[in-house]
Length: 458
Ligand code: UDP
Image 1 (cartoon, rainbow, N blue to C red):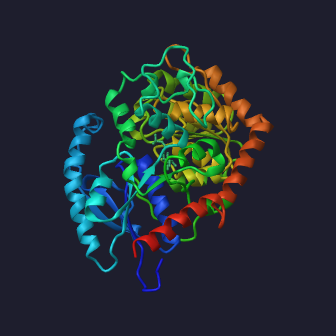
Image 2: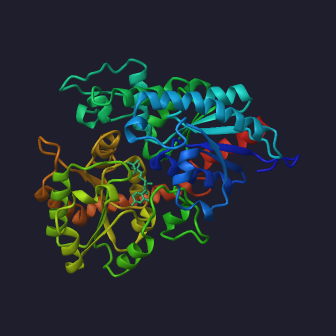
Image 3: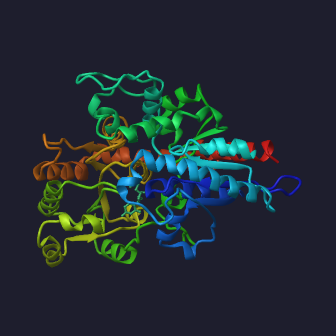
């Protein structure tokens, strides 16, 4: 976007280095680019070495450091030490990048940063640029963490406690993010999530990957506190028309999608017949759960496309891959192009962990869900999918946290056949389409953000 002096609005995007955070922030960048904003994206040095498809992208990439340029173990990455180091080294390296970009031909005027990195706004203020704090989780879940940060939710929760938060339905402990339900399990992660709000008043904007119609009440409540823009779903809008982007899409993926294999296989399936199964980029299923799932999929007598990441493949039952190959009713891949899969005419339902990206993608693309949440915000997302948006069912777990094969098989049948649920899924797809269309709520919130940047900082 250029103003009358032909200046270009330039925004630096800084995601937390995890796939579920990179995707929505990168997709948001594309939305901004479509409105004429120049984008640079800052990623850590190590992440840069692991990305698959950089060569095809025209992105202007800046590197910062989290202090672990050679990588670190997943244990280190989920520790307080990692976050502390990232803050220390990240602040210095980001300040250098900002100084350089401020002095360049198109001076950067804003950093849109992941809410997991609340220190970024301090660097932004110091360097004279504005800060937009980007929340990759739902507004409902953000509200829960904010309530906790404010000390209004006393932890641990009592067993039968009913949690009431403005704009949200009553929530039982099992509906709360797992870090709240059992704070002792990952105390550091809970601190990090609650800390998303520690600096938030310094940010000029709060951007949330949701859309107004989906979370109206809780967004209204949050708008009493801050300037909140509901800019989602960030997925490219062509997908909402069941089309693929014309040009080769650029992405930043840590995993290599088996696109051709998946689409070729889906092309051979009947309309609405396939159960698509994925637990996202981070979940590690119990071996017993993998086995129950494998059996349920075979017993369901429906074609299935199951994403099993390579590090999870050894948990599949012995001979499973060989047997399904012979039956030709199922396909297991290590990663797929999920948006392409969800819009494929062959897909009838999505068996998901209910990570927020997957949930929002399924809602936006009208695919009903069977939710088997594992941890984090997945508990809350699946509660809302079932009881508020009514586009899916949440599976009941046994004592040991596993959902049995008979249950899964029954849920699959229910979701594939429940006309009311399927009609709801179609209804949400339409509402979402209207939100992202020119003049819709999501489009307006992005436009407001861009216009404000243009007038305020040029
Ligand atoms: N995804 C994908 N291919 C796959 C599985 C997942 O492209 O085979 C994408 C999916 O579209 C979503 C992201 O990976 O954008 C997963 O994010 P989510 O929040 O659902 O789960 P997380 O990985 O953070 O647990």
